[in-house]
Image (cartoon, rainbow over all chains, first blue to last red; front, side, top):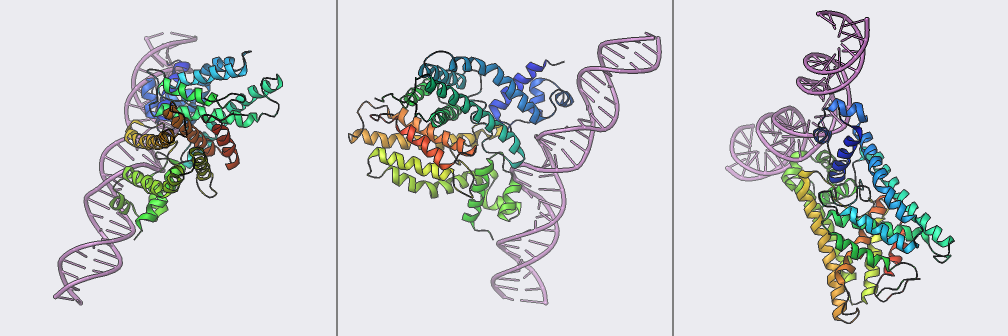
Amino acid sequence: MLDRDIGLEIAARLFWERGYEGTSTADLTKAMGINPPTLYSMFGSKEELYRQALDFSIARENSRRLEILQSNLPVYEALSLYLYDIADGNTQPNKPRGCMVSTAVLQHAEENASIARMTAALRETSMQTLKARFDRAVEEGELPAQTDTDTLARFYGAIIQGMSAQACDGACNARLKRLIDLALTAWPGKRST
Amino acid sequence: MLDRDIGLEIAARLFWERGYEGTSTADLTKAMGINPPTLYSMFGSKEELYRQALDFSIARENSRRLEILQSNLPVYEALSLYLYDIADGNTQPNKPRGCMVSTAVLQHAEENASIARMTAALRETSMQTLKARFDRAVEEGELPAQTDTDTLARFYGAIIQGMSAQACDGACNARLKRLIDLALTAWPGKRST
DNA sequence: TCATTAAAATAGTGATCCCTATTAAACAGT
DNA sequence: ACTGTTTAATAGGGATCACTATTTTAATGA
């Protein structure tokens, strides 16, 4: 009998590489080494499996990143390390390129609208997490009081999405880091060269 | 008999909204009001139709943008207007959200790898166009000689991709413009507030 | 040992995928 | 009107889609 976490890991990897619409249940059962009825008894449906695989991956990958972001480091340092960590995640050897969430299910058949809403909500949550960190920085006097933290969060969110897209297209880690360094010059009070 | 350009327009809109994998040939023939054999005699295959629909849309939408970018305006102004025009294109009423190319076919089934290569190549071309404009600015003394124009182009390319993703998730035009204004503070020599 | 339960594999559901062979309709020239 | 040719519509082919009913195997308990 297949271990549940191993099944989710295998599913997450397939969905990461091929997307929701590009992954078939036959792909999933074959990769997991199980028969279709086992998949449905363990995970309910393809859609449910996708949700569970995303939750599983996020729970495992996101904790370290959130610790970095919400640490007591200066907010600028925390953001830098956070972005570098994402760039690393987008360019791991022997792993699919890009991010599993940042650029997932943007275009989709109408029948998959609820799946698209879920990934959109995950992206929104991650933007709100960034914004909350910036709001804290305002409170703690690290950023000017009039800072538009929402736009700041969506700007670095766009950088994260752009990195994912470019990683999917083959960009290497060093290229993404140059991109991050340039994006960091937009930080309030910083000066670009 | 269906006019070829009208057919491409209808196909482009469907592919734009639902993506390549999310659009079926049945969707296409129904929207065009033709029968399957007509689609194949006119356009060859679903893949060929997608290529032609992209070429058609790009030829029509890109000329104005390229004129803006390659005009004799100061490069910073040209870039600003170029990005604003893209933001407008990402948030048109009664049109699909986001960009048809920037975030298309990032994840895909293995059988669609050649389609993904094509969209990736289109994105790379658009980055090279940006880079060429920045190189010209260096030659003309608008930018310092040591400017890393490649990274600069990929940075604004990431902004374009991030805008497309966020527009797909529902971002309004004003929000994208705030994002652009912040991204423009990363321009060499500019100072963020 | 044998009946009962639980697990897993086979086999197949109707629907839809991309694409075409075949048939039907419209039009041309004589 | 009557062929010959082009154009369009129907119908369907082989494969795959997400998903299950059924059967077979395996484990369990008396």
